[in-house]
Length: 279
Image (cartoon, rainbow, N blue to C red):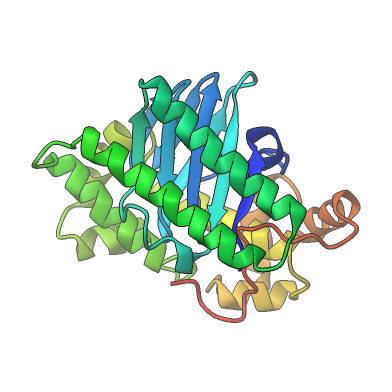
């Protein structure tokens, strides 16, 4: 993703359900501005509910997933990593009660949408400047909603786990391997993860691998053998069994369905060509 994208939540959620509901790595920055409805979001190891007038930010290289309710409305803004510097470095979920602050964010996002649609000279410079203003707006809201001075031990552990999980996508590392790196037992890590994220640490690792596998299957032309090697499955046969187990169909069937749904070869803003290891 090389440019800022602004869209409604309806447009943002138009991909297949797995795209947003499976825990996965956010490549660039992501801001969700919820104006109506409610849902549940996974934010780098924490499961949180959200409702109207909530601003949600996921920084680059953070794990996340979202379940948007049917009546949820709002805006989504996707940022390339280079433009995320003016935004918080950790995930945020903020309730914005002040009407003026609500209107200010909505106005900033709408200004960006119009600028992108008009496609005038220096549009990229204008949108980059506008995204900085959105980042400043968010930082101000963070200052108005200070977090506890010292996070709980469980939160610190889950953050360390998720940081490692992002780095280890496709390396073949197991939950037990990561637990050992964190100097905790797999049982303790799973218990803390279930309490904080609503799923085990192993489930988080599996979801990130399923998501990455489906991205490469459906939004690239790489061979199944190449994908299995890049994600350290050991063999194409093991990769096929993994996809069948977690997706209910073969890799070839997944790719065929994706080609029918997106004949133009559209690549999502989350995708980057798999010519190097995700880190």
